Length: 249
Image (tube, rainbow, N blue to C red; front, side, top):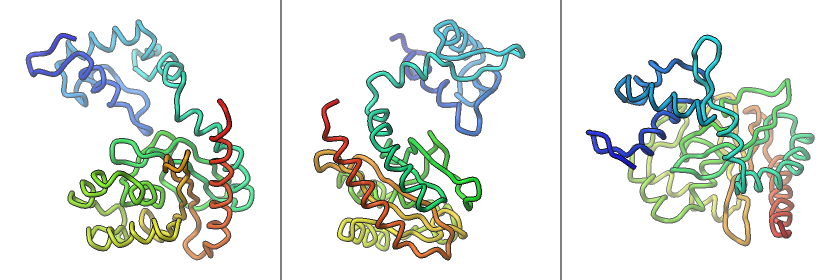
C-alpha cells in the first residue's frame, strides 16, 4: 500500500476513516469524517467515495455517510465472535429470564472490553454499555474478569498505565486493582458495585474455550440487589456455553 506524506499507509488511513464511527455516532458527513480522522479533506473524500463504491460505506439522500451492509457481511464471515455469540445467546436468554435486568457478553479487544451482545428487560435499571461498545478493562465487571485472565503482559501494561475513573467508585489504584484481579482468579467471579454507575452493580464470570478464557458473561443489577442468584445463574450459563463450544462446528 502506498504511504502518505505523513508515513501512514492507505490501510491505516482507511481504518482511521472507519474508526470515526461509534455506537453513538452512526452517521456523519465526509467533512466531519476528515476532521475526526485527521486527514486532508480531499484525501478523506476520495477514501469515502471508494468505500461507498465498494459497499463498505453508504451515502444517503442528504449525502451523509454511514457504515455499509457489505462491511457487516464481511465481518461476520467465519467470525469467532459470531460463533461465540451463537453459542452464548440461548444461555444468556435463560439468565435474562431469571434476572430480568441486563445480561451481557464481552471479549478482550485492544485492552478494552468489547461487548458482543446485550439483553435488556424493558424495566431494567441503568446501563451504559451498547452492543459493539467498549469500556475500560478496570472499570466494568466484564472488563475486570477479562483483565484478571489476560496475558501477564496485558495486565502489567494496564496496571502501569493511567486508570481513568468512570465513576467515583472505579478502582484507580494499581495495587488495589492488582489484588482485586488475584481475588477474581481465585473466586471465579467478580461483584463490582458502582464501578461504572453508582446505582448499579456488575456481576461477571469467565467463559472458557478448552480451558482458555475467551469472554466474560455478566449481568447489571440495581445496587441494592443481592448478587448470589446472579452469580449462580452466570456460572451455570458459562459452563453450558463452554460445553457447546466443544461441539464440532
